[in-house]
Length: 466
Image 1 (spheres, one colour):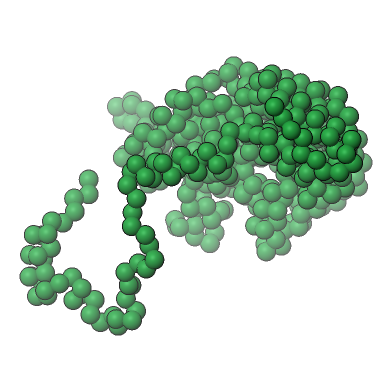
Image 2: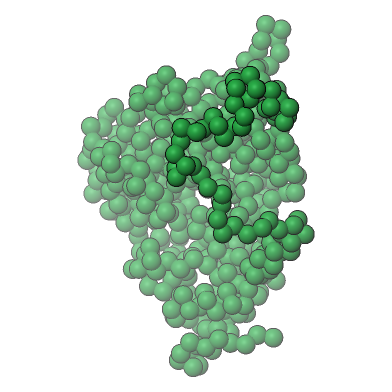
């Protein structure tokens, strides 16, 4: 029912009935010094016109730079219809569908989302989303420890080429549950997980192996070999994938014949803007036999006595329900609005459209890497195949180069020095389908001038551009 506030007359009559003059009299037992005081130092509110002007001024301060940064958050085209529909009142304000008969629209949307994700990942089951990709991987690790009855350990093999933010998040979530993350190095020539180093763990007791595709460097892993290794050594295979890449690469459910056991990742590329860092949502899929250990909720479809389609919450492993401490997860809600946008986004693009986006991303990245590596002082670091990111080594400090590029409206990439100091002065660059040929020209031209100016001056110089 719609909320109907009490009128002044309603309030007056209720106070008369209970025999008090003012609402404040109901709280006279609370000492005056404990009561909330009026807000101090809060300026008067601005008018709509003033707020609009202020926000426009703040937006202009950010400029309109061309973005070549990826590293887990990607600048994709989002059709206007996606958020035009997602922000309609029935979607924008929809909450958890506890009461199925009153939430059929929400449940149907989630069912369609799950159907799309299982098709994209070639997996049996999808949940109705998680908080984000990093915490989704943490949930996958916890799930693997519960599911893998062949393993007595609580050890997980994690490639060093996995997104550093994911590694840090997983460690923060699982470390106090006595789960050990064992790092596996990457090959210095290809950027792939070092199979020789991985073989050192053959025959040891580990619950799972995490397999990124592509990895943080944008490099495509040999997922068949990694999945086969995991299963040959009684480990579960946890895939961490880019959903756009899955439109052109073999999905996790088909790796090494048997497929990965769990697939998860970040859903931001499916219709969520960069938005200064979020919010985003995580996705998770798994094999049918593991469904009761999957965190979050699963929507099912059935028919009623009249033969009409109906949707309901089929599984919801949540602690605030009956299971409490025995629940498989402490997730209390999901990123429903972002999932709504992703569902609309995938429906608009379809499989063919998503594949075209992925192909365009790859082509632009190959083109970008080719242009930049013709510049003196810039070289490609890994020779492995990539999706839409690649690593470049610079003959100058990366922070200085990126700062110079940013000063001229080019966000040139992600500095890898903090997370991978062994790579030296290296940056991760990305080119999605939004980058045009002129964008690539602009980046290459400005980087060439910056590198040339530094080489000639032998010191930091800010080149001038017309």
